[in-house]
Image (cartoon, rainbow, N blue to C red):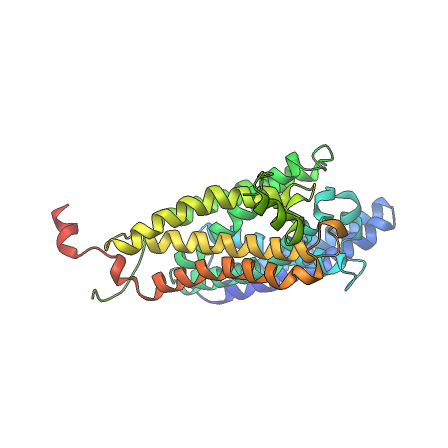
Length: 334
């Protein structure tokens, strides 16, 4: 397949910038004619981009189109984050006023940046791999972990946090986006694994230590938005069994699932820790729940180590996978 399709997706994603600006500007004019003009302009831009993207040969992989749309939305999320920080203005002002209030929390702010930067890069890399006919399963699994962690914490936080009763109709569109992305996750898991190698606790724990740590180092864990509590709860249920399983995989040769599992987990922890660390220090978090200045070194040391360890394990499994592959003789006997 020609690389022009991948280039077209990149161009299409950047079209979100003028589209956001046009819609925001025309909506504030409060006229049907202005809104109609904005819609026509958007359709024209998307049509031109699509024709450029598919001018030679349409990609056969359906995930190409899912990633193309998600890349477009990732740039929109980056615009949301930049406007929330007052770096730009007049692009998504209307959306920030009318959307669910969850987007304006510190957690929502951080996942906007994560989706607009890290997920966007992943989408472009997977699109490029599809365009060149290469396998993208490894980076796809990393994205699966990151996306699922983001979706689980965000949805449950919206439901049980202090904004649980303030859900707008836009939440239904967000659920559609999540549903399609979950389908893409299953598609990635179903892809064959290709390896060319030569064989050679936060829920009000009564412990004094936990209480002291929460009060002195991570008061954000008690933020009423519920995101940090759910983040830690999901990490406990997700990472606890994971480390037990990986201990077995590191001791017993031939556990072929280790590489895939570490990719999913490291992607999930990278997204989770980025959002958690950023929100713990962010000015949108109430001052009483922010990490105190004198406790920040300990807070950063603990959380950065918690982030780096699974990335290092993932790197070890991906760069030296021979230990985790069973001999061909055993496979033939089965």
